[in-house]
Image (tube, rainbow, N blue to C red; front, side, top):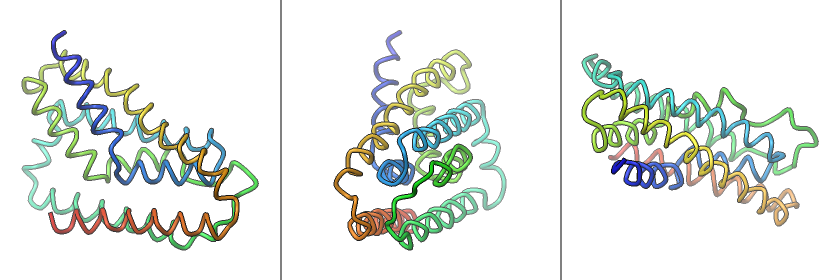
Length: 194
């Protein structure tokens, strides 16, 4: 029980701090109905939890034995994030009339598996708050992470929906999207040099 508060604080800090997934959540909130953004959030949350559990039960240790795994993960994640950055930057700023567009469940799921921040949060959280692959502790941590991650990412969608009222003009939304694209690309530069 003494681990619940520190695990929760770690999960909150890792989930709510700006990162690639959070920026896509913000952009989704400004461009699409909130329900569409929350579908992305659900995919991202569940994708992260499965990644977290896999790492907690030894996936990272196993994959680290493969030559070049960390480099493949790093460059694959950077390529995916740059692709998303490009998509944001070239967006016209026109708000869609239907819900059928925008990042969905699968995009959210895949983003977490290609997101170096998600791997880092999983590896460091597991290392700091569990004793090896202790099943009960890993499951407790994942159970705490699930609602905290979903609510944290959801708050970025809600923030985007709030901003939507102020970015009705395509030029304003285009400027916001390009700013978010630049921040996403900058996070890739950080990943390349770190």
